[in-house]
Amino acid sequence: MSATAEAVFAPLPNIIEPKWWTGTPSISPDLFVIDGNQYRVDGAPLAPSAELEAHMQRTFDEVGLVHVVNTGLDDLQSMRLIATQVLKVQRNYEGGANPRKMIQKNVYEVGAPLEARLHYHHEMAYIGSSTKMVSFMASKMPSEGGYTFVSDNCRATDTILATPFGQKLKELGLCYHRSLTDRDSFTDRLNIGVYNHWQQSMLTDDPDVAAAEAQSRGLEVEWGPNRLLKTRFYISAFEFFPQMDRNLLYASLADDAAWFDTWPLVQHLPPHERPLQLTFGDGSEMSDDEKQLFLKVYDDYGIPIPWKVGDVAVICNYRFAHGRPAVHLKPGEQRELGVLIGESFDRLETRDGKW
Image 1: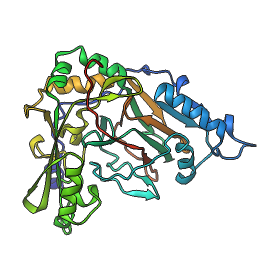
Image 2: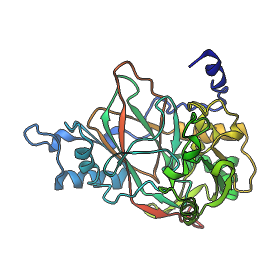
Image 3: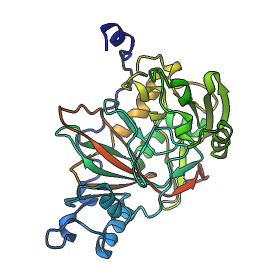
Image 4: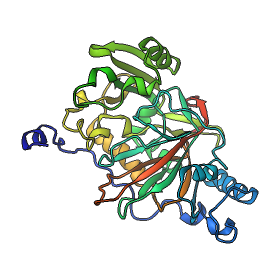
């Protein structure tokens, strides 16, 4: 890239920058890490078993997070068999924001540039049909940058509700604004300003089908220039979690323009021109201080997941948010996490008296 191009596409100054964690895990790894060596037979790679399934399910039910290490596995389909000991029902990534592609059958890629930091978020919180859990499987890991972070959402919920900002979120709710580009409009040009094309997000090449798919998920739809699919979704910032019989925070700054602060070919755009915007439900914008608090409430309860090849984690989408810092590979290195999207559910929003 030329010096002129580098200047044009240079990132704007970051106002909001995640810290990820305070240096002490919010929940001890002893409560959610399972050593696969306990269940490996004669040193062979880990295989599904009734004993392993029971241990994983019990850990997931109690904590909402399970991380299986020392599996001896190196291929995604074998890791998928371990993940599906808990994540038994999978869904397609229809309506998703990230440009995920399928790596193997039923296994998606993360769908984001490695150099982009991914703010803490709850998977598919921006549509009416979300997912109960998500699984990550480490198939390739670099010498540095082998981390995902999760954040204890129960404590984050308590903390944010004790602030005026949290009460404002509770009262006004949120509006998710998304702009999905038309793939055919970028056939012969750089993907400047592109997050995801509507063809990939809605799993169709038919604009009428795409609009119907978006509307079926609770989105308001408007077509813009160059077949730009613009959607709005109004919903609570919280979600009732039946297992705990309480409302939990179910939103984050990941759905704001700040998501693109380190995203190539998008980071140079002013916030109002980026593909995502997050406002309060009445259309009013969040202040910089409110956005910083929205970020900090997850950072304060962060927990690192250090990856090694073969590791499998299953994360409750209610009880934890997840994200990661930017990753910078050394020559010859790769980083690949396979992703499984769990059983879908229709958003309930909140229940009175369940705070």
